Image (cartoon, rainbow, N blue to C red; front, side, top):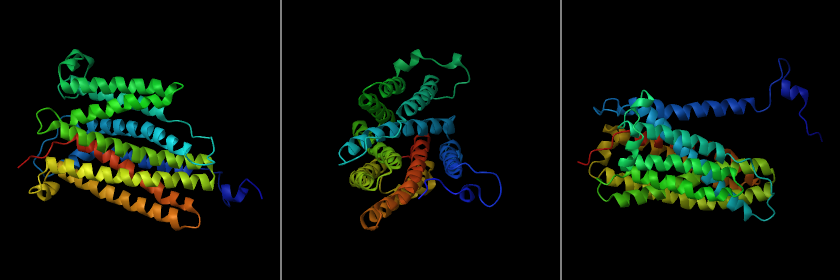
Amino acid sequence: MTLTRPTSEVTGASGPPRRPGTGRAVAVLVLAVLALAIPLFGPSAALHGTGEAAAPGAGGVALLRTVLFAALCVPLGELFVRRLARSVPGAPQDAPRSWAPYAAGAGFVAALGLASVVATGDLVPHGLSEIDVGGLYASRDGQSALLEVNAFLVAALCARSGRPAVQVWPLSAVVVAEALRAHPATEHSPLVGSGLTVVHLTCAALWAGGLLQVLRTLRRWGSAEPGAALLGRYARVAAVLLAAVSATGVWSSLRRMPPGTILEQLTDTAYGRTLLAKVLLVAVVAALALWARTRLRRAPDPLTACAPARVEVVALGLVVGVSGLLTALPLPIRW
């Protein structure tokens, strides 16, 4: 048995040699561009025909929030899966290279951009002279923005340290800051809304980031039994995470769109349209998760479950993009 591919397999019958993995890299690049295009160009599509006006720079704000949410998912998913991997009997000690420092760096840049928007009165700054840094301390939104900037900076330092597990604390601070920002004090029962957002965002980050890390770990291990055991452990926890994400999402939606108006607002408002798109995407993700779980239990090779799991990761990436877009759109009116 040879460990190398025949020349004809790599180069084909004719033509220049093709680098292994080029097709996969191109596919990942295309999907990344698509995920970033959703928040960037989504506001105009969602607002079309609704009569609502978008806030200045809504596309840029949605893009920054998408990057911020993704920067939460990656390190939290790594911490979650590493804890699961330690409980797998006979698991290899080899682990994929951590992406947490890069994610924290991206989160820091995104949080800094969002803080600059808050510092100019929720307008897009066109120069440094327009940014009132001192004014950030005078408002709740400004303080939350500063907390997120500092938390990602601390998380990056923790990820580079000898105890990367401590980055869970600054990352938790980002989750809390996002929850407080999304539910201002003028809202009805803001603490209830913030609590729902904390649970929703935490569970979603563990679900999406955890699946990405599981697939990276399985590729690194290359071993069937420990890999199937890790995937099974993740699947059991992911079912609980999906239930929590669904319950908190429905509850939060009902608080913003009362039952008597929700059907109309799902089609006539930008927020409702985007929320409907997110619900449909989550339904697709749930179906893919069920497919992967069925393969894990019944297929002769349990690791064939990785195929639908990879598609699930892509769909979860689109969910993150839609979630970023949702935060930049005008909230529905409580009729």
